[in-house]
Length: 389
Ligand code: GLU
Image (cartoon, rainbow, N blue to C red; front, side, top):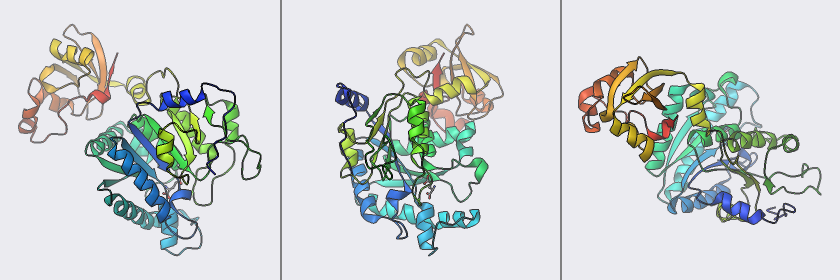
């Protein structure tokens, strides 16, 4: 356990780790069922306590953490005194409903000791495939982080059926990492990382500490199933890593049972497997999605001040700088921002529909509520949802 097997001949390796993990601020941490639960005995309280303590300490150091935690089905299976993980969909969903509240209750009690608040966030694939729900999920998660609350995310197993399912929390953690544009994804599991062979069958298997790129050979190493409790094995972890490194974000897979694993990983210690990010991602996942996947539904023309602020000062689009609105877009649609000469210079997702923007344009943000009777956000397009063209 926690073997520090040398990755091979890469002499610059420790520096690669240190450089890759430098300036990491927002981290998604995924805990698998094999850690959170003990077979047939419900939640693994001591391990959860240790991980919560580590996460709390990292939060106290100013890091933003989002937790993707499995364990609902396994915990519910034990609570309902079932002999094994249910096979029928409805019983599994019932177990998830029972187990999820138990899981969050346990986290809430543990985080409370460190004066951290938790929020339960349950997602389905449909939430991230639809632009409005995607934006809502993102806004909510970012707002929780701004309030120093730790989002504890799981698949909404109670309502998920095959066509709207992520299927496993490795995939969910990858999509969440891209959704919030985290700086790092850490997948904690019950093995030390990716091995040259399945270590449960081949004792001579060696830990691979660095994966510079996910080649077909690396993907082949992911064969084999996970534990009885979790759905994802190494295969889904590698697929998840693929989705994340492509957006320029590194991924670590490590053993959650290792003492002080999170601190040690972030200190650059040679634990687990590090997947290096693409050096020059085409565009980070979500921005790629904004520019390439979504059809712009309208045009917002802005004055020179707003144009300067967006192009050169990294600012959001506020109502005061808007001079004209074209199209009938809805909340969450992509719109193009043009300057007074009609030249498109940015594209982003709007927090208000066209009618609302027409009403609040040229007004200060403090007037939004009195003009509309409500206010979603100060920004018509938040900087995080804006891509310069
Ligand atoms: N969402 C499932 C649960 O909480 C776990 C899925 C997985 O292990 O990947 O029980």
